[in-house]
Amino acid sequence: MPDVSTPRASVVIPAHNEGRHIRGCLHPLLTLSSSLPLEIIVVANGCQDDTVAVARQVPGVHVLDLPEPGKTGALNAGDEAATTFPRIYLDADVELDQQALRSMIAALDTDQPRLAAPSVRYDTQGADLWVRAYYRVFRQLPSARETTVGRGVYAVSKAGRARFQQFPDVLGDDLFVNRLFTSEERVVCEGWSTVRTPRRWRDLVRVRARLAAGNAQLARTNPEEVGALAQSQDFSRTTSSTLRALLRLVASRPQELPSAAVYVGITTLARSNRRMTGRWHRDESSR
Image (cartoon, rainbow, N blue to C red):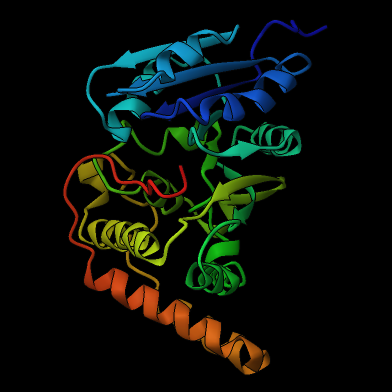
C-alpha cells in the first residue's frame, strides 16, 4: 500500500500582504490533504500585514518569510523548499475547489512534460459596468479558454518543470510558463479556480497593462537567456488571433457588440500604458 503520509504534490503559494485572503486560499488544500496529502509552502515576501502570523497558525503549512517583496523570488524560494512533483503554483488570493486539485494532480501523473490548470470563474461581484462588460467578452475568447494564463494557478509535471531552471525576472510567470508548452502539452482540467476581478475599470486597465507589458517583454526575450530549452515555443504575441476570434464572436452574436467595444477600448488603453515599474504588480481594488 502507498504511504498515505507521502505528499502527492507540492503547492507553492507566493503571498505579499495577503492576510485577508490566505485562509480562504488554504482551506480547500487542507481539506483535501486529509485524504490526498499535500506539501503546502506559503512564501511570504515583503509582507507588512499579518500574512505570516495567519499562515503559521495553520497546521501542516510550511511558511517562508522573505524580507524583500517580489513574486519571482518567492516562486524560486518555494521551489527550492519543495520536495515533490507535480508542482502547483497558486496565487494567495485565489480559491480552488477540490476537483481542480485532484484533476491537476491526476493529469500530471506522467513522465511526460505537461502543464495543467483548471477552468476559471471570474468573480465580478461589485465591479463596475465596464469591468463586467470586459469579462463578458473575455471569458468567451479562445485565448482565455485554451491557455493557462490568468487562472491564478497552474501546475507542472516533473518533466515539465525541467523545461526551465529558475523562474526568470519577468512580469508574468504564468505567461512565461504557458509558452514553454505546446497546445498538446497543456491540459485544462475539471474543477475551478475563482479569481476576483478588479472592481474599477481604471484598475482593470492597469492589470491588463501588466499583461501587455509581459507579452512584449517575452517577445523580446531569448528563451536561452531565461533558462528555457532552445526548442521551446516562441514568445511572440497573439494579437491577430485574438482579433479574429473577437470578430467571429460579434458576427455570431451581434448583441455582444457593446461589450466587445468595451473590450477593445480597455485593451487599447492597457497597451498604451504598458510601461510599468516596480517588482510587484497587482490589483488592489479587489482586496
